[in-house]
Length: 383
Image (cartoon, rainbow, N blue to C red; front, side):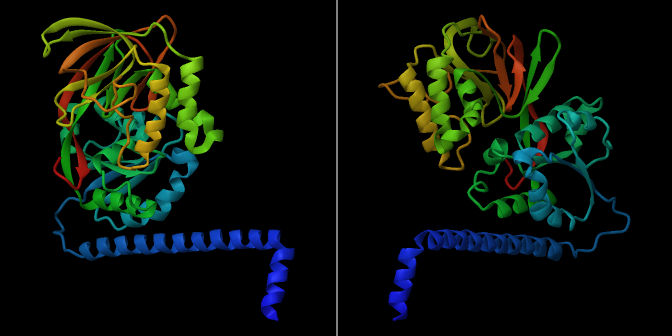
């Protein structure tokens, strides 16, 4: 009797039942997620507290760490994630931790020039832009030659993409957010350090920018940077951005000129291109160019956007797939040019933008050189 009544009720009020089941499912899922996050953070804090009971001599100098937090990272969610998952662990540190909130773009870069020269650790708590400002502020210090060899750089990934963090810690990105952030904070307190190289990009006008990831220019960069404008397409926004670029903003006169290619034995080369990527090789000793030829068809360009979705399903893959035109579809390829230093001149009749570690700069002629192993990154591996 009760069963038939329940069936009649479900048939009559199926909309209410569906809505109630949906609310119950998402509420239960949210409660379980919060519980798991608390257990994860509590366990990491317990691990830190058990090791913090070691006795240190009274004459030992207390280490000092500056944490630069970008509260606007990840659409304004960075502060909440930091306070929940990272701050409880940092509070157990055996050294002095100074937290500084950034209020506007460029502030971290400026403040890096005024922090104590005896600082032991500088932590970038944010996304790739926060790390970019920390590195550029550090490299512009008056005592950079001494300071960059004594300070260590840590990363707490609070941004939306955190490409550099995923590149340096490939196994972390597949974990839950609470564990990834918590273990990053734990690494700051306990991890060793490994050397990393920096690209120095200087223009003829005297402007200097330092990069630890890559510099990109061209249609691929434009399509990738505009993908968030097509949020209405959801997971297909990358494909939509490539389609828009292919039919509305397709270039016809992009050229790339490289001068001073000492290692290749060629003084100057010019290509008709769709764009290029400039980045450091894994050893951090050479500059590598991926040059996208102008012969790329629109179909292959759109196919690249689709394959980018397939690739990024693996959270350990953080950059655009390296591809060339072959058999009608994109595929991975080796870098086109490798050199230790050169002069790069992107040529176009209209105003274009160069992306350096995700930050936009007006495209102009610049000199690219490598500063090998100049910074020390806090990491769990020696390289």
